[in-house]
Image: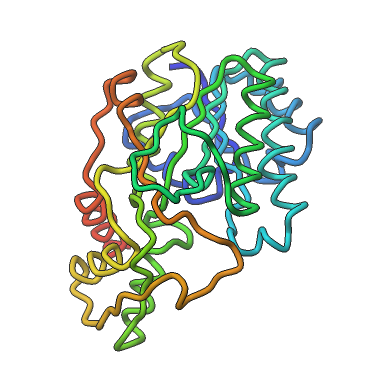
Length: 286
């Protein structure tokens, strides 16, 4: 396997990539510190790629605070669009292939149907818009790219919905959870494995792909599963999204069709609840 460089190595997916690389025995992989791999430094990224000479670059760096992005539009745009453009240019100059991680939030999500890669992207919040603009920047600048859209990412690392629910479940007797937003949770360890599978395939089937765990659920049912698996005693009440207004509007239905990635790279995708059980087991070990 060619040398791999990970941008955004300190984040949730970056940490999962490190864990999976160790499990798979991938030695030729570089996880630079944030100051060495500043997504907002065009010159710095160019110098980093020139010195490391990777065959592949995985971009996990992103502004992901969905509600804060409504107020910090310029920062979200800088990281998610401009930074992606800088990195794509550096990859082009240095002959590297880019694996760029994006999101289901590029879709409006107002129709109950599986979303495939060719469906119209129509973001309804600043985060989704800046991530879509990042995709377009990568596509425009670098032919050798894989864009991987994912959804509802969680793991034993960093802050995420699963860890928040476990914390709140231990502190409270009752929780209200939104039941009318539907999607698919994704264990970041599974996504990391899929990314390495794409790289290992040596495929030149460049383009956009969807990856999440298999199945469909709501935030309410996701929370119920977290508490059931972790044997946490807490009452969970389903509420409509209108009862818990947020600054950023969320898609109502954003379940992605994974047929393309499964068929192209011969990837088997775990069912979301099975992966959740694996994650909670790891959290308990920690």
